Length: 328
Image 1 (spheres, rainbow, N blue to C red):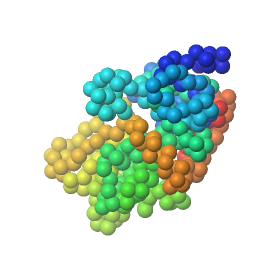
Image 2: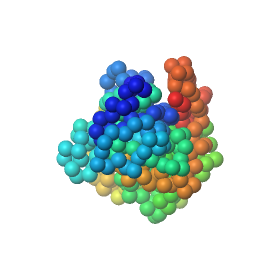
Image 3: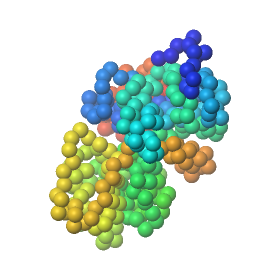
């Protein structure tokens, strides 16, 4: 934590930001439950951040920032030295440190951050800025799959990441079906027209079930955002021949599949990790131009000082949380 008295002590290339909003995501819930695979304790959580620039260090490039600017935070601190960084894959840097995961994050009042990790908007409010990172995960997953207008896309898992995947798949012109085991989440999808159709999962998804939603066909692209081993492995059985599977979610363990089935279908399997700077810029522009409305996503709200009491309640299915946000 940075004290107010230290705001003048800003390192070169760094900014100090005053945290205003913090989105709570699956990573935070997994960390709370002790099931986050990249996690060590103790750790200050928080990587979905809407903030205000409080101080700026000297820098050759300052992203046109000034004190008081509102910003979304790109929370992926990469090394710029490894092979992945040199090839432009800074989202999966070999030495990546994600705020709130590998290093302390934004559940605090002030935070020091590299200037180039800040994305400003003169239009968006702090609630909207805090959701940019969540949406970025979904956009990157859709970009990994190179989804187009002729694709039949199945999104499995209607949490915030899955919802963002469905949103950008639909924006790209694909036919989109959203599958989940929770009726209230599918009702949210329908109310906000995030997918063309919804599928309530009662046991396991099968080819027979999916063909009824895709006019006799199977999905050409499946993006699994569940982080559930059983779901993720089943996708090999319900993808079309020549199709693509993208794992946006993850779990602690190994994925196994039948190789002849994988080979016969000529399936392409992708991992999708984090997002790229261009994704942040794209999303900020889409929200600014009213192509995305984030207001319905924020179902729950709490103050930072109340978080020790309210955090666990967000895990209660009866709360029907879509996205909880913290006000600082």
